[in-house]
Amino acid sequence: MQLLQTHRGIVYKVAGCYSRTLADRDDLAQEICLQLWRAFPSYDGQRKFSTWMYRVALNVAISQARRAPNSEAGRFEPLDGIHLETLAADDSASQLQGQLEAMSAFIAQLEPLNRALILLYLDDHSYADMAGILGISETNVATKISRIKNTLRSMNHGTG
Image: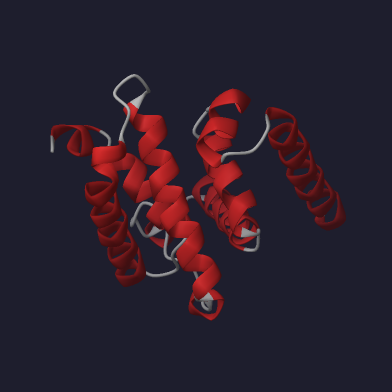
């Protein structure tokens, strides 16, 4: 399926955001691909494929996260599979590593829907796109994003 191959990054982003280990990521990515395959007959060719794909992938990930909340115990592997500790000799790389770990920890503690919002926000989707993918209103998207940003700001001011 060429469309899945073209947009496979979506599967890996979602799986990485909702999994703690490489094995869990692989399992979730496989489940997402299976559900995409099963749901493909319902895809409306008039809509953007990537938007439909995000919706299916996030629904699978959120459902799995809600079914097994205890499976998310432990430390996240780096999202891209690259171990940043190899860069620790460089002070700026160490600082970047700390910031990435703090952001990953923050995202990990969010409720599944808010995690989806941040994933889409960081991927530069519009509020309209996010609303369409997640099946909520644009106003709800804006409110939730604002609350998440405020929480992050207050955490940064509390540790700064």
